[in-house]
Length: 209
Picture 1 (tube, rainbow, N blue to C red):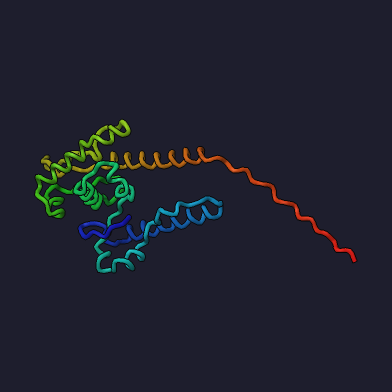
Picture 2 (cartoon, helix red, strand yellow):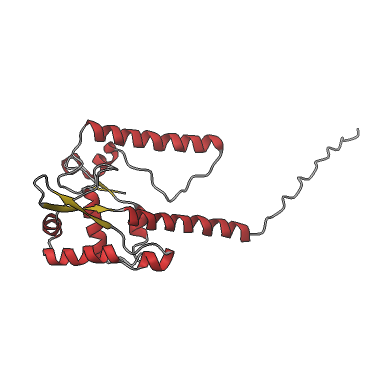
C-alpha cells in the first residue's frame, strides 16, 4: 500500500525512480512466471502501483512530494494486533522517514508531534506503548513491543534523536502471514478429495441401409 504523504522524504529522484521501476518489473515478471507455470496468484493481493499509476490517481501535484509504503497487513490486522488508531498513524509516520533498508528512521519526537498535531507528551506515551506492547509476547512468545528505540549520539558527544527499528513489527506481520498459510493448508487437508469419474465412452452406431 502506498500513501502520498507530504514531507521530507521520497522526493522523485533517479534512485527512487529506478527502485519503483525495478519493483514493478519484478512484480510483472513474477506474474508472468506464475502464469507460465500454471501457479495460481492471490486475487485479493494488489500489485505495487507504479509511479505513473499513483500520479494518475492522485495527480502529480500531490505525488511529487513522495509517498509512504505501508504493508496492507498492518491495516487489515490492526484489531488483532491490538493497536490503537494513534499508534498505527504514528507507525506510518515513522515509516515515512524510513528511506533505505539499512538506515533506520530517526525523526525526533518534536517532528512527529508537529506532524500528528499532538503534544510531545502524547507522542512519547504512544512510543512507550509501542515499545512495550504485550501482544507479540502473548501471541507468539516474542519479546514485547512493535519497535525498538536505539540511541544516537552527535559528533560532539551530545544526544541526538533516537532511531526506530521496526524489526519487531515485521516479525509480528510475518507471523500473521505464516498463520494464514497454515490455516489455508489445514483447510485443504480437511476437504475430502473428490475422485474424478471416468469419461463415458461414446459408441458410434452405423445406420444400416
